[in-house]
Length: 527
Image 1 (cartoon, rainbow, N blue to C red):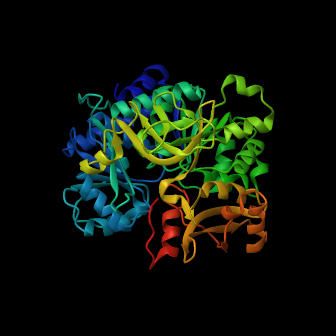
Image 2 (cartoon, one colour):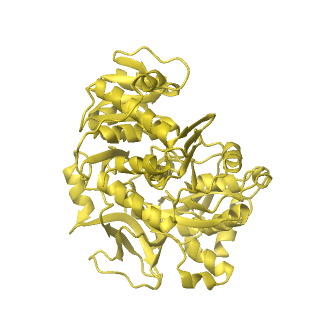
Image 3 (tube, rainbow, N blue to C red):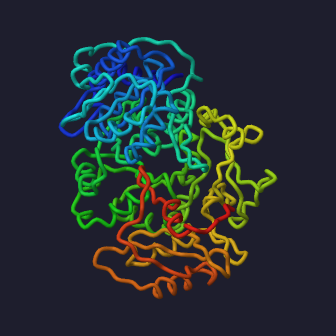
């Protein structure tokens, strides 16, 4: 099975059904298929063929959807770009991925110009989408809508196997060099089929794309929702009010968002002014989420909630906090505890929580181990980095770097990333445990807990807090609040209050960037 089969199936069974809602534009599956065909035919006319890489720099939009599919029809791997990266980083990815063409929205014109000036070899042309002025470049430039309309029709047929590369997603590497994660057509299709089964996706679903499509927290739904003939609703940029309005107007039924996004939605002043009766489930993924935020999501939106966990390297889902049937009879608060866990093993993967020697930890929710996984959704490796690939795998298992406990039901709870664990005075402190407590404080909007240099203890626990508008709290108050819920050594030794926390391109809190501010001039060991 290859990615293009998911769109062919939708056109065959749901050709006249609404496929895409993007602002004022609406397309049926039949219309979307013709537009995909036009884009693919144009790219083929520019010499793009099987194996050629094409980068995409675009906000959430029907054009991102079209690009993913058009490139799949050509057998040309897509290289989605994080538009929050610097021109230098974009230039590196274009060069490293060997991208030969770029599809970009005109709003990123200056970024594209600055990146291409730095000389990535091989980029022959840019296809500009959106409105506004585009800069003059030293490569060929074309208008997206003109070429799609001009070439509109049936996509070309390029034969290839399921182990062919479908996409290369770049993630930040431990060496500071971005790593290209290879995903094959098999990886993507097996994952999509797994989500169809797990989430009971159907043609009645209306998925709202809120998390960025360059990130797999959202991109996986491109293929799964299409496969079942569901409708794609695109929100170009994350604006809480716009998201809430769109969810109501377009009767969204399901979405996966980053925890920071969901936290902003449930704390938005107009959140209670909208009708969410169409929503059947909201998923959270991309980062840990505090149980208190889970409670607010369930109570605010009145729908089911599923915590997800995954990695770019695994297409992405590894766990889902879907309740087993016998757990649905538990009291409400007990059910919420399970929903707030990282989740049980995803249907399309094998997962273990193990000690350093590879033996499994006790299922007592106390012994901490590392999550390791294997299966058809797991990447074959990193693009042009055989040594990094070799380091990530042992005996066919991918070692994730995520530390977790597991209960007797098989539900995993991540306690930290290995690199985020704080060792203070010889004691391990897991930042997510402390964050979960601080999120319970009524004045706290967002928090990140990190280890900072300490001459006595090696590392000290620090909380960096954003307060809700109009709310107040003191450093002493936050520390004492934590001591009321945690062992004293786990409570922050200090609290900084800030207007905003740094975020990654996908909207996650950027702990690495935050930590670097406090460790300049000091050497920190990764545990």
